[in-house]
Length: 92
Length: 92
DNA sequence: TCAGATTTGTTCGTATGTATT
DNA sequence: CAATACATACGAACAAATCTG
Image (cartoon, each protein chain N blue to C red):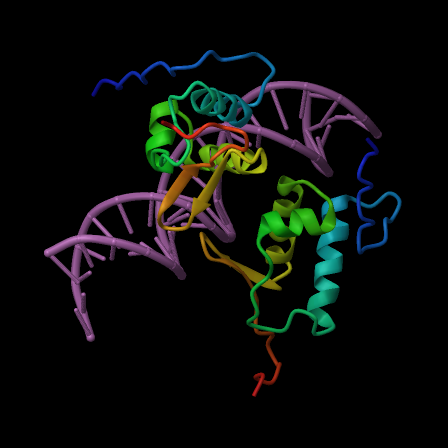
C-alpha cells in the first residue's frame, strides 16, 4: 500500500556540505560530548549506515575521515573504537 | 599454475535481477517442488555458497530473504530448516 | 572438564556498476 | 572528466553456539 516513510536523520542537513563530512562531524560531536566515550566501540558500519540513512560506502568514507582526524581507530573484523585522547584523564 | 575454472552455476543468470534474489528464488523452487521437503535441513551456508558459486555473504542475504518469506527458520550453530507449510498435507 | 570440529553470526576491506553534480 | 553517493557483491577474519569424543 503506502510507502514506509524513511525516518528523519538525527543530523542537520547542511546545504553544500558533503554527506560523508556531515556524518563525520556528527559522530565527532558524539565523541566530544561523551556520547561515545574513549575506548568505546562504535556501532558497526552497516548499522551506522541504517542509522544515518546513508549508504554503506558513504559511512566508510566518514570513518576514514574520523581516522584521519585521529579520533578513532579500526580493527578489521572487530570494529572501530574511540581513541583515548592525549591529555585526557583515564576514565577511572 | 593454471586457474581452476569455476563450475557453472545450476541456475540461469537473469539479467537485471540481484544474485541474492535469484538464489532465494531457486531455493524456493526447490522447496515448492519437494526437493527440500518440510522439516528437512538445508545444506550449510558455506556449502550453499560453493554450490551456487556465490560468496558466503550473498548466501546470508538469500537466507534472510527466505526467512522473510516465511519459508525457512534458522537455529544458530545448528542449521536452517524448511518450515511446515500451513495447509500442507504431512509427507505421508 | 576439555579440546576439536561444525555451523551460524558479525564485521571490516575491497570491487563493480549506475546515477548525479 | 572527476568526485560524490548509492546498492550490490565478493572476500577474509573473527566470534559464539552446539555437538562429539
